[in-house]
Image 1 (spheres, rainbow, N blue to C red):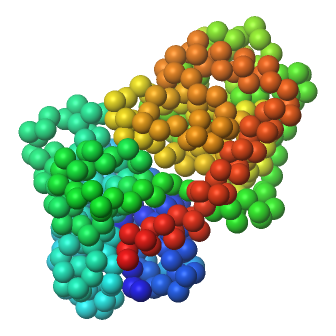
Image 2: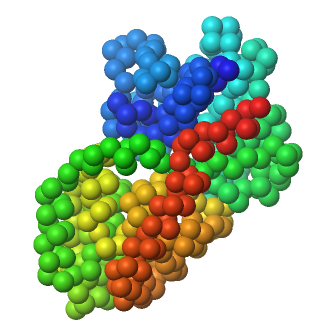
Image 3: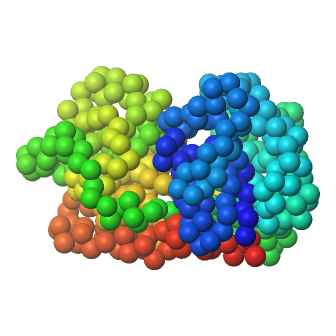
Length: 408
């Protein structure tokens, strides 16, 4: 089967995030399917951009997957530049729909760019090729910019996105959602009940079987903290607004006299402010480290006594969550302290940690104390339950097969 995956922000091991399209495509390719990914050359989440060198497009093969990168305007932030970038990508796809349908001859076309406007060129390509059309939901747009960004439903950009979401719900042959609690929302916008398939984010277990690359400087510092008898609660990932790390700083302030070390590894737009705030608060029990390479993450996580993930208190999370960071914590067999109020809770489902209220420093401090009070064997059993759950339900080999069920 020829599978065409349209994802504006698709990444690869060469380019960095977003990895989900690559992992799914690789599983489909392993199963004998031919996969082509169409993506923009500019993305705010990739570590490295494809080098088009003035060309309108670039084709390359990565691990058997055909990539086609389309040239689009560069942008920074979430303003008009990003909108122009989206528009350029969607219009390019629409103009080249006939060529794409003829040359690749897809049996399945997947629209998967977070924002739903790619459904229109995807629908055209599918119609020209006689292919099945799938719509993949990552975040709910336009609801996300409305609830998180304060946009009015009457804003022209929001109205355009709403028209696209409605079109996708009504015309896609199947809808695949990363978020598990979206059924009512999508049905309200025209999706027939039988169309929905839930396929969350996952992990590649092969990356955890390979010898872990040592993140020696960080791990040595963490080992020194543990040698002082400190319980190490670690966070590894982006330091952004959505990660609600101020709550972790406030919890560290509450626990400044206790034998607990808070370790934050990573970078992001909020890191400089968080470092400055920690200095102002005199948080000697809180330690910041620079990001480590993806291959070093398993070794890093093994250094923690428990791992932390937090969220803002947002209504939008009523539709569920599927964070990649949590999958890494669970694969590392670490007990997890989860600060969230959402439509689902993978930590509770797997029995691999404790869940406390979001943006509540006292609740986080209570959770740290509860995990620290457990003996090492109980924490190890808790972490192992998370790893077992991921291997049974959330590997891309399992998820790739589940996604294919929607393509049939």
